[in-house]
Image 1 (cartoon, rainbow, N blue to C red):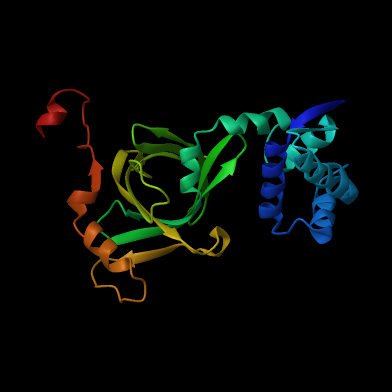
Image 2 (cartoon, one colour):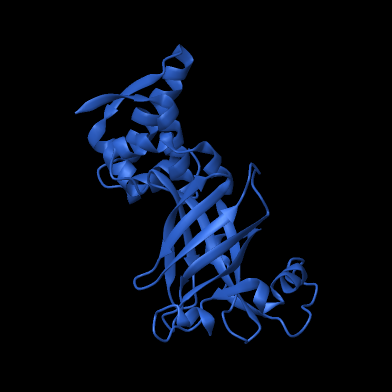
Length: 256
């Protein structure tokens, strides 16, 4: 089955492929694409997609005729359920694309250990939305982000844990630092919450490492953002929130 596919959408499909595979739109790039995607040859990428798109643009046409089966295969490789799902991604709020990239997440440890936990984070287009991935020391969390009233929100989940994050963004474009709040359940099964900060990085997500900042000593100036973070997270009472330990689950608990 064939369909008339919009050239604008096909162009973005090829751009996403090039970005994912780290190739160019040339013979080598088309060969790499075909080696990763079942049933789509390098000639199909070169001639049926790219070649037809170039010719159609010269004619002023907005659509070209392509195999829906092959477009579905390419879409699935990019993380979409189908080509229709890929098309639905164009309904995504375009403002969310400004947050795509790699970050370090910083959260003060919920204890008196005076440590700030540094975790790699990436925000990327995934299927019809934007996905946030946080790499913890022993597990990975993922969740889709949404834009609500000047804040981006995200419920990130691992196999057995979840945390809700809310970050203030206003109308900024590609912010370097984003302040937010997290909430969840501690290892002691208590509700907890606190401040969290995202700091944009130039390096790829895969090269970022988990680490800790110890707050009982002033950090060296090797990382320009460590000293501001040290000041921001220094006071535990300003950064962490938890409930009083309940005894009988009645009003007397609030009096303790």
